[in-house]
Image 1 (tube, rainbow, N blue to C red):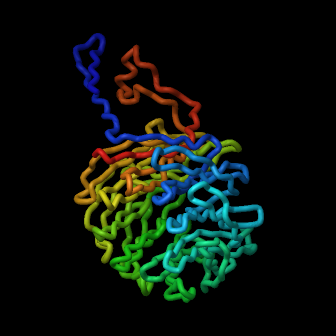
Image 2 (image 1 turned 30 degrees about the vertical axis):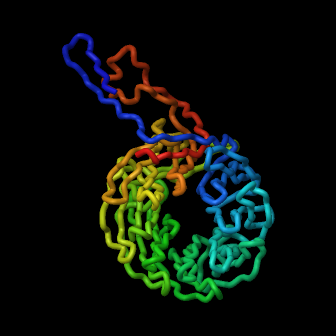
Image 3 (image 1 turned 135 degrees about the vertical axis):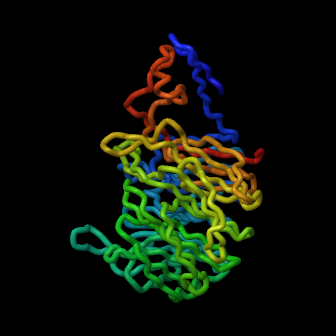
Length: 468
């Protein structure tokens, strides 16, 4: 939209170009104010369902929101205890495994993907994160014990354990112990190689343990220790099975602090050895892989900020990306950098539509000052950039909700589902596109809205990129 304004008492003509609206159609599915932290979303293409774990801050109440992905509606919110981590979907058997913190410790709840009915509950100890191996019909859950540490109420007991559950019944079959110091972190199954990949943190000496195990008997194939400075955290690893590679990313950045670096380790999936180690002077946000093209995609951004997430019961501090973003295209076999694609704002999460050879890149809104020294999010919502995998050409952008995070793509329909975490935002400002100096000279333009900030609810935005 082209706006022309003639300043009173002068002959200068000021021309301001208002940014164009998003070109990709979206649809919003509200999850309600009762929801809080929403770290993940998983899809089940067979039952045409999506599952979003949510939690009410300051309570022991959680939900698994079930979405129907044909007509994009909220079917029901299944009450659970406090969910955490990412659920695992077994499409073959119609089960979704959800790790939750219950009154008696951590349990894994097995739900029916069609209706959300609870089928089985298995106690797994102090911490958990499920991974499914369809070849063996097993579910693997990483867990750790706990004991009192000097100056801290709880820490690792020096060993990790893996519980093996039956994917059909949900019952516990056996356990095996992983040697070496380290508490729970991430777990994933590499089915073609018959391997489990584990990432564990050792808080006593600032290292991370990367374990490769045999899925048939729990035998430790290889264990390596890598530096994990204070304030660091890891991303979920990705596997490219055809070239036998695992990519593990560790971010070295203090909460709310300036940019440091990220370490990217490329492992041989069969032996667990390090094929390549890359140090990247940015913060890695997320990774995805396209096995057919032999590419691994890693998003990155320039800084972080703490957000104030307000829900019934108080505020929650949540780290969010800030600064300019980019997508790194890596060779899946060697880890070599093939291309860097610039993204206008912080590139956080990413998903691949392999069927249509497209990338969906999530960028957060602008970060501004908030209450109590935390930050809020400007009224500008987040965006999703849709890129062509061949060359990285921008096909279009879609406007999503406040503080977008996890994303999943339904390759059957070509739609992407983005979780909008919500939080504090400034009131909407329809005149934000007008430069501040010009705005003060125009009597018919209202001043920028001030505080207080308002609370944006949690939702899921459906991005339909089938027409671009």
